[in-house]
Amino acid sequence: MKLSLLLIFTVTLFYSCTNNNKKSLNNANELAYNTDNINTGALNVEPTLIGDIKQQELSLQIKLSNPESKDFEIQEIAINTPNGSNSLPTTAFAPFLLKQGKDTIFTLKFNPFNDYKLYRITGMHGSFKPVYNITVSYKFTGSNKVSTLSLQSRAEKDQYLAYGKKNITPVIGYSFNTTKGFNEKQKKYLEALKQIPQPPFVFLSDQEIAVSGFNFRLKNYYLQDTLHAELFIVNHSDFLVKIIPDAFDITTLDKSLPGDVKTVSLEKVSGTQQNISMIEKGDRLLIHFKKHIKLNAPGKERLQLHITKVFLIKGDKALFTEDLELLPVNF
Image 1 (cartoon, rainbow, N blue to C red):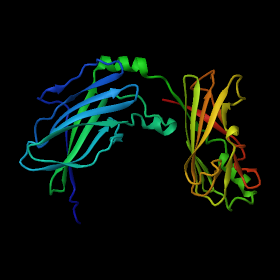
Image 2 (cartoon, one colour; image 1 turned 60 degrees about the vertical axis):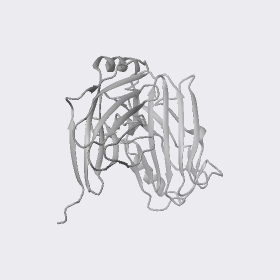
Image 3 (cartoon, rainbow, N blue to C red; image 1 turned 45 degrees about the horizontal axis):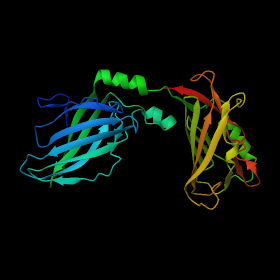
Image 4 (cartoon, rainbow, N blue to C red; image 1 turned 120 degrees about the vertical axis):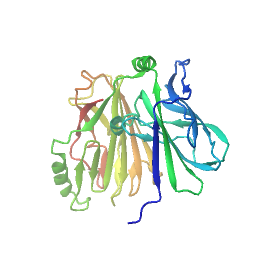
């Protein structure tokens, strides 16, 4: 068996005899992290990590020094959370050569996935974590051996508690109720439509709907008396679908409440732009939804996604036979 030429050697340093890169919180819009420098081994690393609370991004200023007598290549710099979510820089970064005896200093921006479940359901990255790991991967020029340094970066306990108290607001997400027999009823409905290729395919999961090549993915949340939703649509089918945006709505199970005001807009991500409300094969489209609504029991109250009058196929026939119930998800 041929062994891989790539060997990843990870050195994780939580404590160091070198000076700790400790920062004080002087800006109310910043959350500072303390990180130990690495001044031993082939690569010296001096990082400064700051969280921009308003922009919800991490700023990493990092100094890299090569004390060796040969050059090496910096391959990757990343930030990950203790649960394993890995984030690469949002600013441009490409592998580069760090020559022997030289050093460099630069700043990278990150928008880390702090809570994967929250992101999957709501599209939100979540609040800052109290601890991050900064990883720097490098290899000597001409070698296939990649080494990775991992440095733990931690916010001061009191500062993090103050940040959470002021900035972390409860969010409620919603997932489709998959226990109402939607798949069977929708499939039976489509079997009677000549416009749909037979036999029809239907599948409903927590956040996605698949209908004979027409795929939907829902991200949504309730925050500060406002519902936000984004429905991403991809047409892999051979039939056209017309969208009636004004018919798109999310309400309580009973009805819309007095004073509810909604905003619905369409964004054609790719495909024909002549008629944005028509989705042809290969088109990708987003429905953006926002609605001010006062729920009586946030986190417990079920909602209704109204789609039966939104998606029409040839002959102005409805693509869906029923609206979908949404179940609250607490984080």
